[in-house]
Length: 455
Image (cartoon, rainbow, N blue to C red; front, side, top):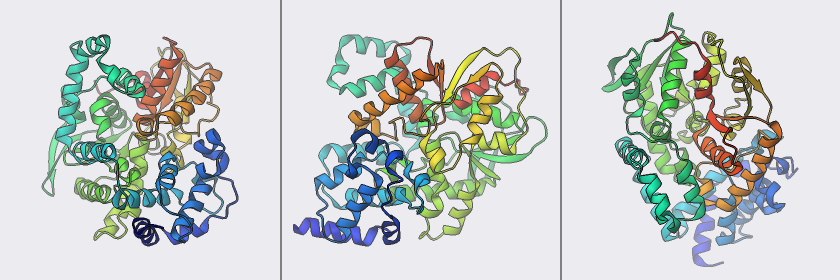
């Protein structure tokens, strides 16, 4: 073993949770739940296999070389293995710890380091920069420039999967949900607490609770209308909605990429901001964000204010949980369009937050909707944060099989609860070439069918 590999192995011994490594009984229950194992049939591409590789590195039997790193990178991080595990192995924590060591101590390619510097450090943590990007992208899409660029062939310098992703991006905006709510004429007022400014939108009718909306970074730029619809649905269900201005990116993409120090910094800021807002719940409409917020207690367990992080994590709920389990029933419109709908679970919403029943309950409550359960709805669609950009081959193979399942349902609409999933399913729908098929967020479909009284 080289000196570099020995140093790296020492860092793995210090960083990986030894109890979690030893908890794995090698029973194999995780194998059919793992998308990369299902696709490849390789033991090393399974949770059990990756844990065995981690243990071998920790015990000095294997060099943490490029082959080891490649298998860790191939993991989607969907965490479908965790509900399947009879020993309750927290595989997600192990893969994040492993990637943290690799990102911090192993040599990185110039491309990888550039992507981390631009996106994880230079863009996602900064709200103003994200909104500026949204404005620029919106201009590119809105003035016809996107069509001219595609027609010119300039995009051919990009890899095929990035060309595909550019084509299916929704209309971007730099407004953000707070400004969009004001422009939509939704009643609001501004509050300050603990030096933090927040927009407060009163409930329709009697108040049943006070909810802080986690707006997200990508959600607020590419899915602003979904955020606005989330506010409208929560208000209609009886919640006072608070949008703290100083909130930042949840840190999920940082955590999944091994940038745990950056994730902790963002988490500490969010915990403080929402504590000042004095809310009963923190509402999310993105499964990936919600799951990471839900685990702030683990992420910040060694931080000075660990108890506040634990309290914050306990308040995090998906919007579907709030509407089904805590709010007033929504009144539905009687003139809804007839559609056959299926639902693709967000991996992190299902596997980490444990939310399965509530999205389906909302779909089944909608007039005009014929709900058809998607075979393999609990299997990842291949999005997994930015996985479809970093591992385009595997992501494409997984999506192909996913669209086979969608086709079997005969559904016109594929519903998701996560922005990455929605983009991935939009890509799949475009591949199918059916102009009558679409992929939408649950919140947006529900907003089309609710009889709002907020005028």
